Image (cartoon, rainbow, N blue to C red):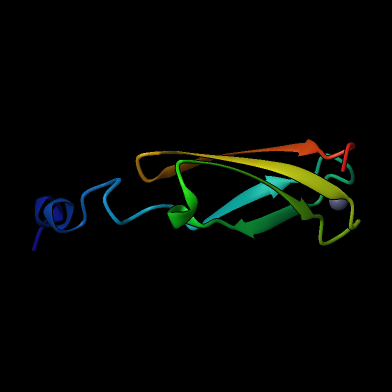
Length: 78
Ligand SMILES: [Zn+2]
């Protein structure tokens, strides 16, 4: 089986999506891996606490096909 066969079996953006992302905390700068839910929709927004400094992030996830674009902002208003 060569690479072309693999592409046919697992086409990008069809059932094979990013399930985690590496992010940097906007408060303390610590790098963490967060778990993503590809089934939650193509645009997701939620609040998650930093494992290190426990301050809240506002997380925005956008799926482009199977690739997740993740943005973190300090969730000051929560
Ligand atoms: Zn932090």
